[in-house]
Amino acid sequence: MLALLLAVSLIGRAEAASELLHNPDFESSFGASNWFCNGCHLSKSSDSYHGHSSAKITQRSHNWAGLSQTVNVKGNHRYVFKAYIKLLSHTLPYHNVELMIHATSSSGGHGKFITCGESPYVQQTSQWVEIGFDKVIPDGSDKATVYIQINEPGVNYLVDGASFQELVLDTNWKSEALNRIEQMRKNDVHIKVANHGNVNLHGVTVELNQTSSAFAFGTAVRFDLVTNPSATGYQKYLYDNFEWATVANAFKWRLMEYTQGHPNFDHGMGALNALLAKGMTVRGHNMYWGVHGHYPAWLDQLSEQQVLQAMHTHINDMISHTRGKFAHWDVNNENLHGDYFEKKTGHPNITMDMFQWLHSAEPGVKLFLNEYNALNSGRYTTSLKEQGRIFRDAGIPIYGIGEQSHFNHGHDDMSTVKYRLDKSAEANLPLWITELSVADSDANRKAQTFEDLLTLYFSHPCRRGHHHLGVLSRGHAM
Image (spheres, one colour):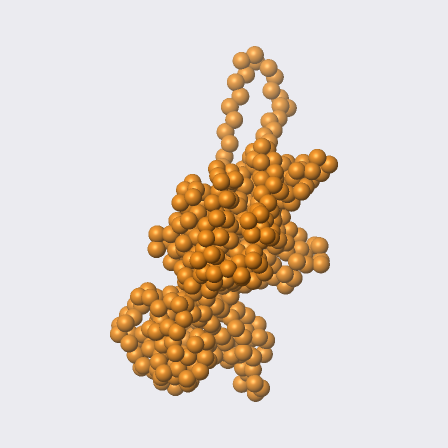
């Protein structure tokens, strides 16, 4: 996984077009020209995110029953939707709020239903949660109906502060990015030559070699090649070009401890110590991973309390070996895509607990959420930003958000990627591009995509002036 570690902050977005929703703030009366509710009851509430009123959705008869509105759109254009939701009831500890569009054509046909965004951990609390997505409307469509869905019909909710706008492409994005690089990533160097011997300086040149970078470029590494005396070419390339590293596999719980009570630290620690001896800064990836197939299989046979005990044992064993060696930890990898630990333990906020446990075990290490489909897709951009914000507001010891950045052939334009970076930065936490890859069989096109992404990432302002970027090897961290 080629990955960039990048701390960024909010800057101006690509300007969006005019608002397409009618009555987006829910201050006016509902009617045929704006909001409607199929299979449910729509009314007003004085409990609002802003303004005086919001939409109240009750008496939902089906999982698809919810708030909707149809707008005019242009096919093959990208649109951005956002709204704020508050649950009034619940049937589970947390619910997945799903956002869909039904793209249709006035010339006829059934159209196409598309799932565009998800917010997996929305709970019945007193706070409003932002939901949203960005999506390209299918070619040939001229209308889109936006749906807010919750799979459990017994859940009532409020919605306020909605918006649906076209994301206008910025054709000048690269020149603007290069200008930001000139302003933020470069500094003048003043050289004073003291010629005490009155030497003729005609034709003298001065050469400067940069030997380190404040902007954190790094790579994922194979533990076996880092420690193999024969892999000198691999090691030379690594140490000549990067200053940060992530050991790709050796510290993942499932791969370390296939059999309960018999963890193998040898591979990981050998690579970690070799990297540190060369002056590398190393990230810990990852302490827990609740996505199916990525946690120890033997956990399935344990009770809730036994799983909790095993989790504590794991973290204590890990920190006893690595204390003071890792700069970062990805705490519960890809949490928006997997809730194994939440379900297995019955603790809906156990990921918050994981951050507390790890912080208590080693207060000096910086702790991260780490997620995909937030930069290469708009499906989880808003939900990841909100998860980071909620953790921060709750006083959880989170340092930053890790953004995986895996792009395929036909990647999104840089205006869209920048929009997602800006949206993520609204969490007011450092963002690090923890993984970066481009899957494209055309070598020239692939190289251009890398250049575009690196230019955009390198140009993005960093929170509080800190300059961090890193690159971790090709593909997913396995």
